[in-house]
Image (cartoon, rainbow, N blue to C red; front, side):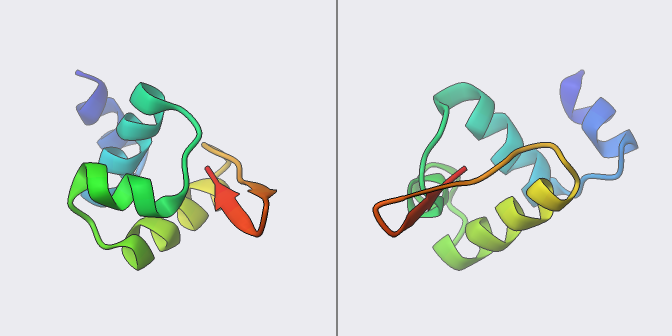
Length: 68
């Protein structure tokens, strides 16, 4: 299963949840990710930043909003 593979790669549960949601819905702000995953916006944003540091996702700033 993909979750097990991601866990073996060192991702935690929130990183896995956010990553899989991004694969499903595409580029969105952290607020949308938070709503879709029941994770607070600030935690979703921090998790996205961690995923970006790991090279799994990237961010784009558009109209003063970061999309991941």
